[in-house]
Image (cartoon, rainbow, N blue to C red; front, side, top):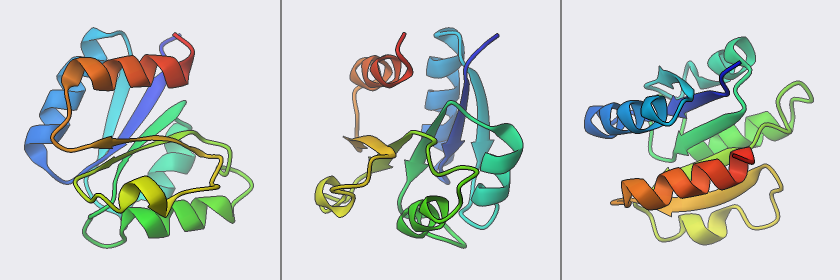
Length: 121
């Protein structure tokens, strides 16, 4: 069974890159393009990893993480933050569900290595 990754990202170019990169690596990829639908998508898909942009329409990434923390059903799902904001490196200190931050623009090779590390592949 393929491991599932939920990409929560509104930049279509990044979505296309991640979809190609992760699918070629053998992962099942689902995309959610706004924060409004993210929590429902997490519960429906039950991803093994969430790749989360911080600046999203509807609900920002930080608010999504805060909502996830309060929900026992999804509060152990690993999250890899994708952000162009330098503050993202410190924003989630002490939050065990956050497994790393990849700053935009990122190297596809380095990002895939990080994903494999988090997934135990």
